[in-house]
Length: 180
Length: 191
Image (tube, rainbow over all chains, first blue to last red):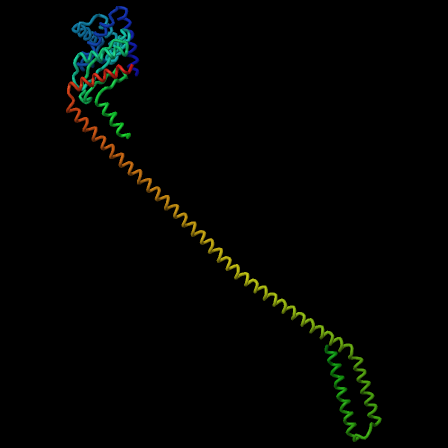
């Protein structure tokens, strides 16, 4: 909980910079790139978050990675501040919080569409259109496949789930049969 | 008492001696009339009798009256004792009778109480039996219900499992499209 509060605090501060510069979306993408690199590289994550290594060394490593990823100046400066304050262990949460804040600013939502088997793009777009029509916001839809659903689809937006899977229908049928 | 007895004895002896002397006189005279000496002996005898009568009259009367009184008292006391004994006897008879009656009543009471107790025990036993029977019936019904429920659950689980397996095997892309179409339709209906 403390981590989440802290992450929101840093994310909000960084969003202020992005809004001032007018490139908060690009800054978010840069943070996401860095988060992906750290996610894939545990050693790098450990080094950047560890106080055992000198701050200058860690900053230098961050700068090198930033250059290789083609990050702009602001994200690298932000990462340097996190290194100075020993907050790199919260980088993933900060990135997520920034993403959420960006979505709020840009008036969009993120949804996950889970299907039992692959779905043609026209059906995906149809579902996306329905979700946008329903929420009145732009929907960024990510796809997942789960064979246990058997058939149909399931969409998650935050805590809300629109479930049209055969698995759930069978579960309902089962419950009704138990009650009879 | 001794004095009176002594007087009586003296009088009796006097009379007896006089009588003997008179009979001697009669014998000596040969029964041919009363001489002067005899006459005076008779007179002295009479005087003696009168004296004795005079002297002994009162004590003898007192003695006899006392004796009569004693006897009367004795008889009264005996009568009283007899009456008392009779009363006691009657009382004991009554007591015995009442005791017999009491025993009979007690016996009857005990019998009645025993009967009531017997009835109470029988009623209690019947009630307990009824309660146990109902409880057993309830337990049996619950067990049957539980068994039915378990059986139904097993049947449903098996049916759903089979349906799931069948659906997994038979669901085709066109089914998936149909399901997604229905899904979009339901989302539209949610508005």
